[in-house]
Length: 366
Ligand code: F6P
Image 1 (cartoon, helix red, strand yellow):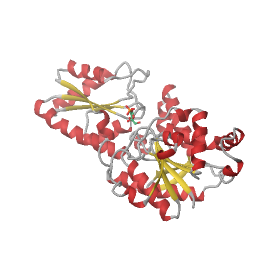
Image 2 (cartoon, rainbow, N blue to C red):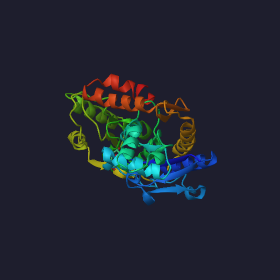
Image 3 (cartoon, protein in one colour):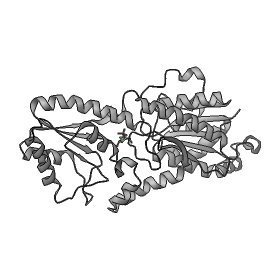
Image 4 (cartoon, rainbow, N blue to C red):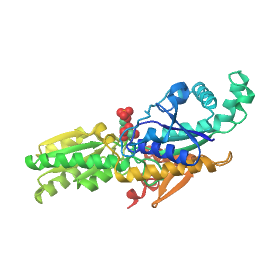
């Protein structure tokens, strides 16, 4: 029987439990054995009880859960070759030569590096007499399949990452709560949202909550004029009878000269036009709670596709990432998705903002 390990890595995201459930059950259905690798890549590096076979019933009830019940970590040891050597040894000892990784771009880059190094890691294990040639005989190639679990929705070549819509839902709930008190007191609220260098959550929160203004890294305002523009817009909305003022700030917000725009600066502008203003940094509530329907659906369909991809993989197929494009679950080369995502960050650093937007999902283009 083919043995496959599944792990979650990097920041958790709603839908990761549903991914594990789907991978385990699709694997069992297709006659494989699936191992849960606990605590992200640390589970591979440490092995032992952290690599545990999961049965159908072990993942019962995991469909809607938030967080990840197999744990996650940003594992430093795996960044070193020595750590990856231990990981290869532990996998071979358990008879595992396929890995489904659910995480963000950093975690998926690590996975692809692991695959490219695998043959040389196996050679090293034999040369150093850690494992015998016979023990390694059937494990000369590693299959990696990536699933994108991240609230940030920052991966290229997929319209949506697992967790992004749940996080957006959480933001909307929180802004709705804020709205009632804001309207009661005729106050302004600056709401800071997560997303690292991606403005998707801030953009969508602005649309879904009817904010006065959203600050996004990809569409930075003019460094010389943004303060006056913000004041003018909020003043105009007030004059039209709006009681509350809501400004969304992405945690990675910048101006067109790459200066960081802070919630404090935004607050100061609103105070200058006479608004009683508060700042709410939403923080980790955005990663909490149950997965919304679209994330349960994405996790389940993509988990099944990950197992199909493992079973159809050959040593020469590039590692696939399971994506969704135009409502279709598709496979794209993992390296392409990662390199395009890195390219966006580079474009922003070089102030090529329009070019950056080309590689973000369609929401930005529209
Ligand atoms: O990548 C997900 C994310 O929640 C980002 O939006 C945020 O910047 C970061 O992780 C927070 O990381 P931590 O949980 O380590 O504070």
